[in-house]
Length: 240
Ligand SMILES: [Zn+2]
Ligand SMILES: [Zn+2]
Image (spheres, rainbow, N blue to C red):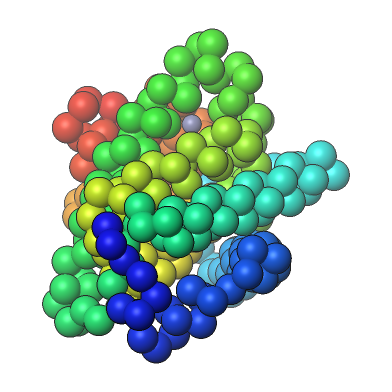
């Protein structure tokens, strides 16, 4: 962990020299951008995809959901700041160089490991006493809309972030792999809350966590706790 500035080169060096006010502004800008990207992607697919709807109506967009979604953006910004703090203090080591094959392996590892952690986290969120205070809000959306992904209790958002940071502490991933993983996570979450099946139906057979897969979870809360894949639901007998 004797990691210092002299070992860095290229773009990471710019981030290394950020002051904390700069980190705060950076994390807010990037998270607001990702929020708008998700909403834009959602609306774009809804407008251009002509497949039939999974549920008759979209959940109405409310003012309170909008405020909660902004709180989620703030929580994600906080997670990025915690990550920056851990990096600056040597707990997280980021690698800059990585082969294409290495990146593919790292992204796949992040997706599978986070899927497993999120399975347990999500399953626990459905235990009655936790569900009531934490996860129930997300499930007020029986059908979904472009904010559903961001309608989460702050503890859920930060919990997800801490699981991710724990993995980054445990293994030195490359920055590119982490960025690709986070982008895929956002796209997956956006697609998972569409009211139309985005993926070809054959994808179910390849254990992909499709839109229908997560939509089922919103209709039957005892099934489909996974996120990117249906692997863990199949393993633990909660697949529908
Ligand atoms: Zn749930
Ligand atoms: Zn959901």
